[in-house]
Length: 534
Figure 1 (cartoon, rainbow, N blue to C red):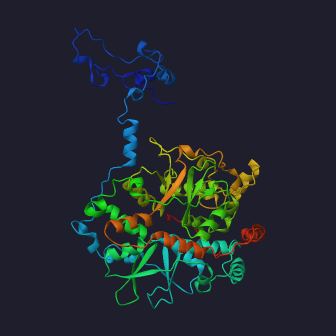
Figure 2 (figure 1 turned 180 degrees about the vertical axis):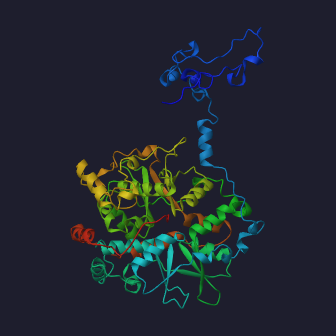
Figure 3 (figure 1 turned 60 degrees about the vertical axis):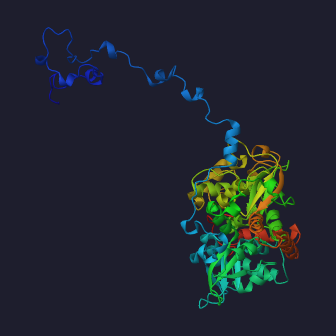
């Protein structure tokens, strides 16, 4: 038995739980220190079981929540009116001060070598496999192109491989395109799991953009004329040689002007003007309905030579965007069911993958309106690393962007479930569902679980599609405002579409066996998904 202790040494539980007086602290008070004439009562320990009137009843947590005073936020006046908030969103403040190297300089005197990074030059050889090249493309990110050379002994680029080529290869393997008579044999080789070298493939992908070259001593005026005329990128070589020292893309040049716009007065004056005032953008836009299968969107981009498509609901409102860069999510055989699923479902795959990579929810923001300023448009192009921005009739919501219904209609299992056959199989059996839980990161590949285009509330997300503005349009505007004479970008677009339309497409009945065969095969000769953006 434990030794007993006096009540002075070991207070009762009631004494221990009772709150100390705000006037006198019992632990610091002794009887000798207090006058007998004091009217203040002494705090002495009570016997076990004796309760103080002050602690006879303690309020429960639920009682404390009753009659809780309302939050002052409910009565707080908004700092911004709706109109002021809309104006702030349309013209966000810019904190960039620019690079000190270019302060006070005319942009036309800046050399291309000053804004390119040699580390962004990535080579593969002609004997490299399509699988290894795709892995490097996805892993590397900007400028989203891999240069092809004869061997490791040279730095001369003889070809390029980008996401448009990856899309063309995917369609070829699936039997959805046949650029020439050799396409069928290449597809058969890929289906057997053979590692196909680039030397056997590059000439059979249909029309491809020819690379443009510029010496490293050239100034930005030369680059502006070429990129503003419709070319997507420039390969920078050491003057007098064919050695590649850099790659300059349209996005890199637009971002350079945006980050240093305060230093260049010629283009600075354009940023505050609206797209409608600048007459910027094209009204002829290729688009696709959200209910259309994904494979149709890939075929349109390949056949028409475009890098992205707006996805519309039944009222022609923009509800999303599919880019050729998103093909990286289809490089695994477990993603084959996505091809027959709807474009809306694929958008949910894109947003969930991007949200998991960024650690926050992602929403479609690839639209502007005719009253948007050039600064607002360029800021979106740079922030989203996009090639195009869709112009919609209605302005974007002033307060916030509502979550896309398709995002929340898709089951998103944890990453660990993708490769855990026991866990995913057990879930499917217990729930009675036959949907696959494998595929791109964190996303169900079942195409029949997303909302339809008729259910999408596109008017709350953007507006009716009325045009498109691209990086080419922005650079062409800068070039003309600076007194340069770039070629008409529409000529380059028409040339690219004419050359791409030569590709033949078989009927859908002839395609299905190929897709089913690939679903059961071990590998599509491509791999992985990454964080590259359009």
